[in-house]
Length: 125
Image (tube, rainbow, N blue to C red; front, side, top):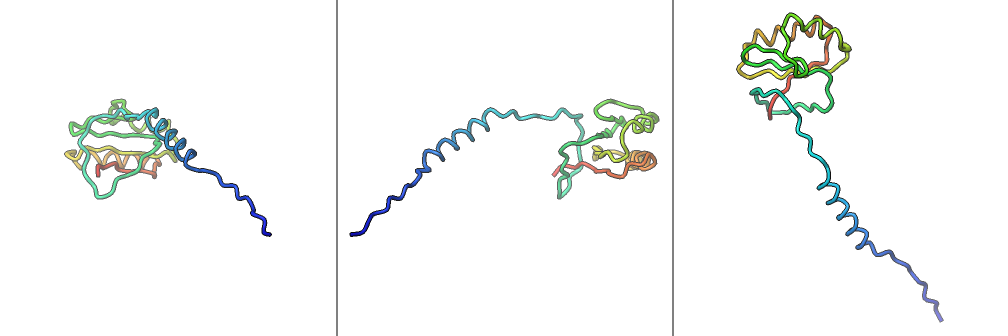
C-alpha cells in the first residue's frame, strides 16, 4: 500500500489581493509635486533632458531678464553669485526660444570662465 504524501500549498490569491489594495492606497495617498518655475517658452527637441536633482538653474527670458535659481539677477552679478557654488555643480539653462543668440552665448561664456563644465540646456519634448 502506498502512502499518500501531503503536499501543502499556499493560496496566493489573498496575498495578491492585499498587495493590489496596498498599491492602490500608496498611489492615491502619494503627493504629486508640481515644481514652481518661471514661465518661459522653451524650444523643442527630439529628446528631453532628465533633470532630477539640480544645483543651479539659470533662466533667460526673451526680454533679457536673467534668473539664478528663481531670483532675478543683473548679468554683471552672475560671476560673483556663481563663485558661491561648487565648480562640479550641475547647471541647467532654461532659455526662451525667442531669445537673442548673443545673450545665450554670453551666459555660456560666464559659466565657462567661472569653471563650470557640467552644463545642460533644458528643452521641451
